[in-house]
Figure (cartoon, rainbow, N blue to C red):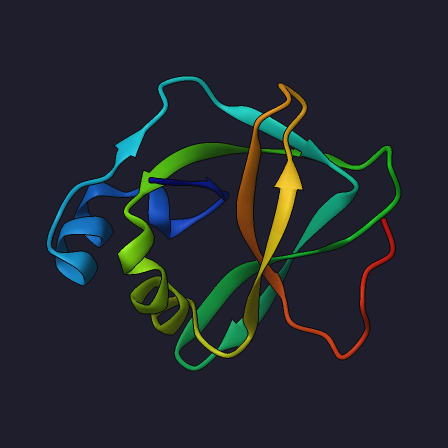
Length: 109
């Protein structure tokens, strides 16, 4: 299983079942991530949140979702070309992946 920090639709059991045919385990307590901010962008048919690099004082919450590793290509496709996976560490110390806004620049640690 892969731990995914989700700040949007991947937390929803409805989305999980409709898009991937199964429910994922979502940890009951929210976690937090720093160094990132959320922006809202119009993509295809609606407004969606995208995580972008920010200063270390920027914090937002999300849920840790456990997804089968073999479903990552399907989740990549669901997220679309505007997002890319990044390995992050939450404030509780959990290492997970998070979908962030795709850019041409590499993020410095």
